Image 1 (cartoon, rainbow, N blue to C red):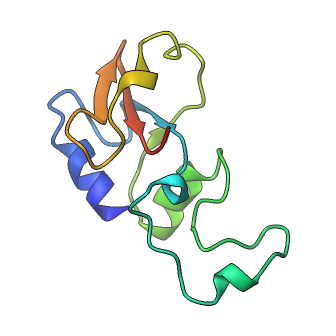
Image 2: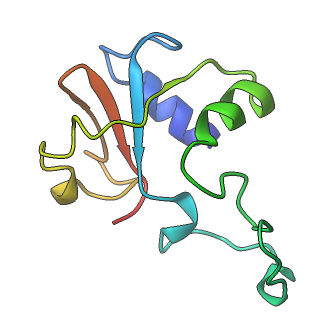
Image 3: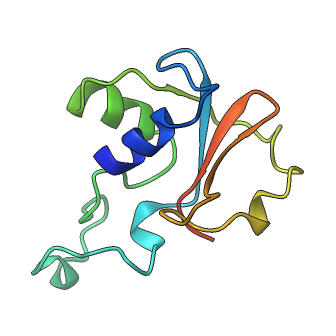
Length: 108
């Protein structure tokens, strides 16, 4: 997640804690996602090898675990912007400003 924050900060229009940020998809759905050994054996509801297990926890993860202020929004306003065609992070173009919202595409 620190790499994602760094790459978000490279977007000129991005201002930490102010610019709305929308995360599309889940980190653990990426092909490059590295799982933690042993977790493949666990099937308890609510247990995951990712710090962000479902949408809505991103803000808490950034604010409380990373001490980084991110204005996470859960909005459908950007859904018609073609985000489906964005490349998946960490590819170039996976983080873009769309109608004043920083969109980070984590998976398809």
